[in-house]
Amino acid sequence: MGLPEERVRSGSGSRGQEEAGAGGRARSWSPPPEVSRSAHVPSLQRYRELHRRSVEEPREFWGDIAKEFYWKTPCPGPFLRYNFDVTKGKIFIEWMKGATTNICYNVLDRNVHEKKLGDKVAFYWEGNEPGETTQITYHQLLVQVCQFSNVLRKQGIQKGDRVAIYMPMIPELVVAMLACARIGALHSIVFAGFSSESLCERILDSSCSLLITTDAFYRGEKLVNLKELADEALQKCQEKGFPVRCCIVVKHLGRAELGMGDSTSQSPPIKRSCPDVQISWNQGIDLWWHELMQEAGDECEPEWCDAEDPLFILYTSGSTGKPKGVVHTVGGYMLYVATTFKYVFDFHAEDVFWCTADIGWITGHSYVTYGPLANGATSVLFEGIPTYPDVNRLWSIVDKYKVTKFYTAPTAIRLLMKFGDEPVTKHSRASLQVLGTVGEPINPEAWLWYHRVVGAQRCPIVDTFWQTETGGHMLTPLPGATPMKPGSAVFKQPWPGIMRTVYGNHERFETTYFKKFPGYYVTGDGCQRDQDGYYWITGRIDDMLNVSVREKIGPIATPDYIQNAPGLPKTRSGKIMRRVLRKIAQNDHDLGDMSTVADPSVISHLFSHRCLTIQ
Image (cartoon, rainbow, N blue to C red; front, side):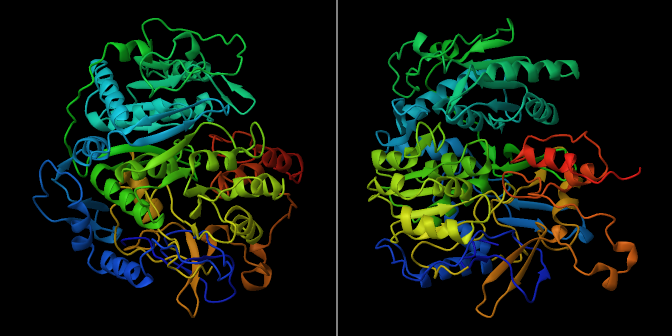
């Protein structure tokens, strides 16, 4: 598998369904045909040739891409080695093994020193309050990252160590993850909306040496005392026999006490009046970010890493209730997110790109941080929510920064649809060129509203399917080049961005993704292909319910009880949490990790209305 397949369609179909080693659930729906081609966009023939080469000649194709990056030492052996067949031995994927590089060096140092982009804005930061704004250039970001890299090294962090990061969407989050990458440590970012129990579980699973967090932050009207949650997590770790030796704390809510200093790369003081938030302090463990940075040098030699060295761990929901630590590696991930960002969003140097995802998710890793920075892009980093202080917020930001490429989730689109067209149309949005969706299937009504109202019927929509496990886009139309018709492909060979293992549990990796169909990467989705060659993704193959089971399978398969429900417990990415349904059926309230559930009220409803069965 190479570049994302450009023919994408999703939804339900009536014929030809097959259980495939699919790339997953495509997120597209058929739009009207009138969307015009962008003047910048290469021809469909050009895109198809790129895709053909990436599939048929992956070593040559990705070898050419690799020449655009800096390698301390070249690949000494085969460019690609892999085994997808569990019947033939251990599953492994190796791209450019033996070559050495550093992703932080490629996305910062080269942009500053070789491409002369030091004065270009890397991020416009937009805080929770409309008046809280700043910007950080590539040079400023490089200096900050080098300083914090030196801080981490002074705290004893070395190549291969794991560092947990539990922060809101502030510039220091980007600095922290890039500093880890610079010194060869693995960052494990935990979404700041997760509980202390979820943070503890992830720290323990990967034996993190250090935690980076924030005092507190606002998310809309809600005040979150993140330090308190972090303290609870570290206490739980201590009780379970794993004391974390150091916790570095960013003073974000209390930033006004510090003054701005000389750094424009730091978030500005909070303008909103704050209640008296009590920030507990653990002497000997807690350290202030700003104090450590004042003492740190602004030059730091990067750690040169093997292309197959791990870059980060990111936990995703698991069917057993124990999250899976997805491991991505330095070289392949760098190539894949840089290339998919470039082509899928039709990137040009003058673009202002805005992905609204939190960096705590894979979308934020790939298309807020690494992908845009690898291309020298300017991005918007947004701390707030779409409806605060009012439902105009997203579109006012689009106009404020002249955003050209906008990438968001169908959930946000459906939410804003409820407020009508006026909050959108009162803003110009003239800068918008390409719209994107990510994270879950988009329904026809939401697609049409996004196209008609937000895009004013002139912006192509790239409706992307991919997973935490794939690292980057797998299925998508290409802006202005692909007829946007409502897929998936069978993945018979690896792409550079594919995960390499589940942290600490390679057997789970093999069982989850390769055992069902030996020789294929399997996501557990069914699909069918139509007469035009487009793929329809029909949903999870283990979520299927056979109708008329008594006749076709036998009385033993007849359900004892059918319970009506307003919805099912799902993750934020739309996966049904089958383990939770089993617990409800058994009336077992010990549900395990629930940090990824989208709507907990559904679970309460199912428990309160379940059949009173005799155990």
